[in-house]
Amino acid sequence: MARAGDVLEDPQSGDRLVFLRTAAETGGDLLEYELTFTPRGFAARDHLHPRQSERHEVLDGSLGLVSGGRGMRLEAGDVEDVPPGTRHRIFRTQAAPLRARFALRPAFESEVLLETLFGLARDGRVDAKGNPTPLQLAVIFSEFADLGRPPRPPPAVQTAIITPLALLGRARGLRARYTDYSEGVSEEAGEYVFIDRWHVDAPVEAVFDAIADATTYPEWWQPVYIETTTDGPPGVGRTSHQHFKGRLPYHLRTESTITLYERPARVGADVVGDLRGRGLWTLTPRDGGTDVQFDWRVYADKPIVKTLTPVLRPLFRWNHAWAIARAREGLEPYARRRSA
Image 1 (cartoon, rainbow, N blue to C red):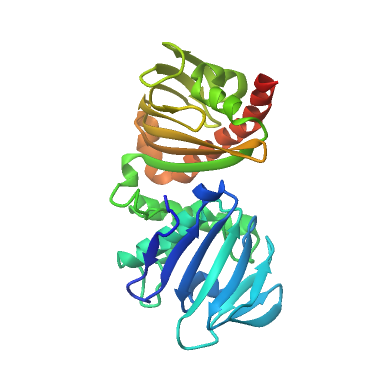
Image 2 (cartoon, rainbow, N blue to C red):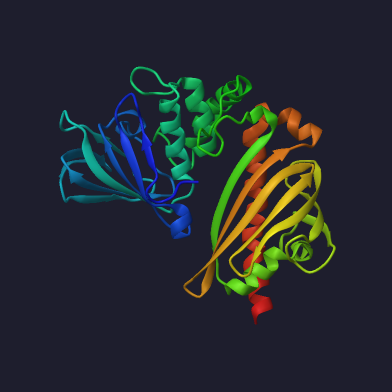
């Protein structure tokens, strides 16, 4: 996970990115970074961010921007905001690299996408123009389509075209994420890395107690959690057993042991069973409520999931997203009731 001050460099183009404020540090509200670069690749083509606004601020040099059909040249000190869903592109107005600051709201997983693009360049997985192969782009697009996509054709048509290409790319061992925490780990081994963030309008203590106590999950995380048992109150060393499911037609059973317990800020656990890995919940008070972040790195050991991972990873990630959406729906009202 990126942190403020982390640097990404493209040895081929000389592009250099410095993270200024990251999703983890802003509760998912904002990703801000400084980039020294020459416009090219995806950013230099017409595209849009379906659910994010993007701020362009030139620090040194000049930058061309077309937004909503309006062309402009931004000089040092100029700032231009592009609303969500607005067609735009940037273009070069000078031969030398320029320096600019970009801000994306909300952050979502934009920093992971940036790390991936720079990681591909670092590992020589791009062509002479700095572009990944079509199959690699399809794999990336299948995972990050909500962060940016071409304005045409319609989204449903884009998905219909990209999905079989992405499946083929994954079957050939291509990954959607090339970052420090996933580099060198084969996705065919059944590994998944998830980072989910949202805000809960409830006191942090109540939110923490709900998350730390697995026996409450069937009450608020419905219909995902079917049954949970534990050997005692939450604390380091305590073990619980979970029986849960998603939208796909299979059930999972795991055993979790709490390895970190810092009320009301952080709770983490190691997991074994049909899934094997580590989860970390980080809670931050804000505006009378709580920013929730769930970092989940897991290996799918259930035979059917592990076998199908190389070709059905996008479907399994959709299944995870569905389950997290149920947590978003249930956690807030449950925590508010408990804090009343």
